[in-house]
Structure formats: structure tokens, C-alpha cells
Image 1 (tube, rainbow, N blue to C red):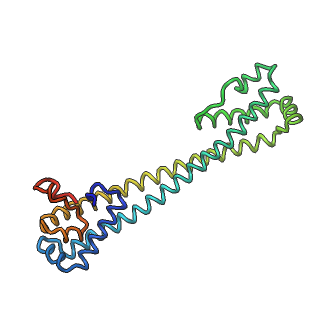
Image 2 (image 1 turned 90 degrees about the vertical axis):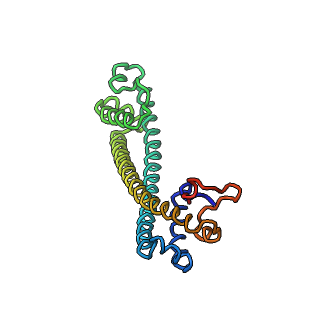
Length: 233
């Protein structure tokens, strides 16, 4: 049986719920605790803390799932658009292999950017500028089916990518906020639980059965002694 503080958040929530339930149904434990100030109102207090922490834990998991989904969508979209862009650039650079001036104007002499923001700027420049050269567009359209309409659709895809970035960043923000709210709620619950476990260890010192009912860690007899561990669940 682990100490309360070493458990994961879901496990700590479960432990708190089990303590509340045990105290509610076990009159002998409840009676002993009431003498130390842990009355019904105190357990109603922790029940409220628990329910709020459970709600925020669920919300954090939901927001994290949405963030993960948004990130996956963004990564997939980036890969698809990047592959199209690389192909369009390669063909255009081939057509312009004897026109170094235009190659530089379209920035085709540069490597495809790796960073997402830099890649978007590079794609935007290319698709906006390439259609401004009629002779080049005639060649691209006739020989490779790279038409002005196709490049216009590519620009729209870049816009979709920008929107996907915004959605992903928004979801990251929501996930971080949800994590912070959950953390604050867990701190309140953990403070209450730590204090309770410390008192329960004193009240039920040497009574392994009672401590086990509350799922409070019981040290092996050979390791027992007065220490800070007495106040750790």
C-alpha cells in the first residue's frame, strides 16, 4: 500500500473517496474521529473538495484530449501541405533552371523551411508571386498541370493551416488553464487529506485493522518507530 502523497492524482481521488465512504458506514471509526473534531461537517467539507477536484480532473483530461487531437490534425495537415509545396517548388525550379534571376525572385534557391511559421511565410510568398509571371504559368500549366487555379487552392490550404495553428494554440491554452485549476483543487484536497491522515495515525496507533480500513499505509513492525512517517498516509 503506497503513501497517499506518492500516489497519482486518480489514485489520490479514489483514496479520498474511500475514506469518506468508510467513515460514513463505519460507526466505530466515525465515533473515534468525532472526538478529535472530525465531525460530519468536516467530512461534508472534504466531500465538496473531492467533488470539485474530480470535476476538474475530468475537465483537464477532456481538454488534454482536445489538445492532442488538435495537435495531431495540425501535424498531419502540415505534412500534407508541405509535400505539395515541395513538389510545386521542384517542378517550378526545374522549369526555371536557366533563369537564375527568377529562381531567386521566387526564392527557389533556398531550402524548404523546417519550422512551421517560416514554412508558412515561404509558401505564402511562392504561391502569391508565381502566378504573377504569365509565361511561367503557361509553361507550368501546359506541361505539368500547375494552373493558377491550383495555386489559388494551395493558398487556401495555407490559410487552413494557419487556422489549424490557431485552433491548436487555443486548445493548448485551455489545457494549461484546466491543468492549473485541477492543481489548485488538488492542493486543497491534499492539504485536508494529509492533516486527516496524520490525526488518524495518532487516533488508531497500533490498530492495523482500522488503518487498513482507511487504506492508510501501515509500516512493517520491524520498521516502526516515532518518525515523520507517522503523519504520512
